[in-house]
Amino acid sequence: MLFDVSARLSPRLAAAVAALSLKPGMRVLEIGCGPGAALREVARRVAPGGYVLGIDRSARAISQARVACAAEIAAGLVSLRCVAVEDVTLRPKEQPFHLAFALRVGALDGRHPDAGARALPRVAAMLVRGGKLLVGDGADLRAVPLRAARLK
Image (cartoon, rainbow, N blue to C red; front, side):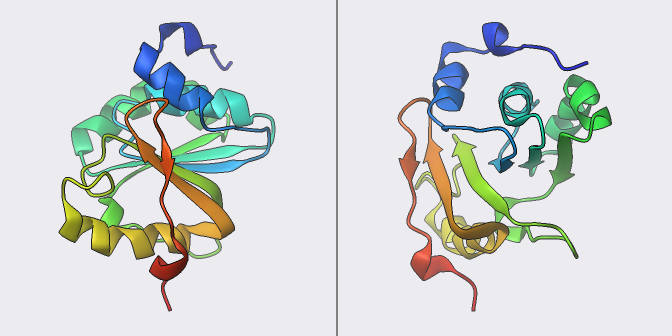
């Protein structure tokens, strides 16, 4: 059973999820998913037929998210990977994502520009053509241009 966690999200996370314009059936990539609070709400909003992949470079965060998202994982709505955004790739036969978002991820918000330069082509390769990457801290999400970042 999937739980409505929107009432338990912090105001910052609730504003960010609301700003994503999610629809049932979407495939979404959350970069820097942490313990999975936003991930669960995104999964709820893209069901039925949707899917969310949460990635984080922290093994501890992924472990926490596995516990927090156990119902969504069991339902096939959520998967998790311990990987840095600058190393992420689609797995063989994995379908690309319609949307990627990152909240407070240094490689994408300008705090670590070298990591960002390596990460953007990886994210672009994870998305369908025309897919969007939204980065920010809450409702202030901004679209990051990916056309020039696409891997050759």
